Length: 119
Image (cartoon, rainbow, N blue to C red; front, side):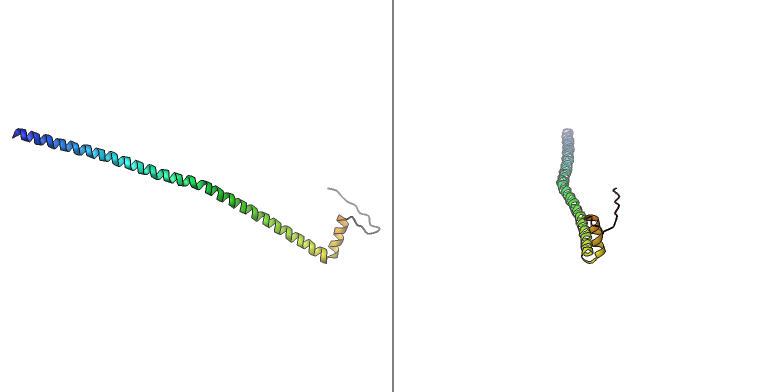
């Protein structure tokens, strides 16, 4: 009976050791799985971020081009306004036409003395 009791205790201890070993193995597997899951998620996030960078740079480049085009458009519109004002003045204002003739074509009335100051 004592022998049977010892065998039962030894078997119980072996079962206990097996359970500890299985629990330790399970803990290692769980930790490994958590690490691999974290690594896969981080690698996916990094890949997504790295694929987004060239698209963002292209987007910012297009925004800069758009801003440059708007500036050029505003300059062209202001130049058009200036030229249309000059055209209207040439068509309808004889004083403006006389000033332009005197300055650009160097046309003067007889008997006038003109003094020019160069800058």
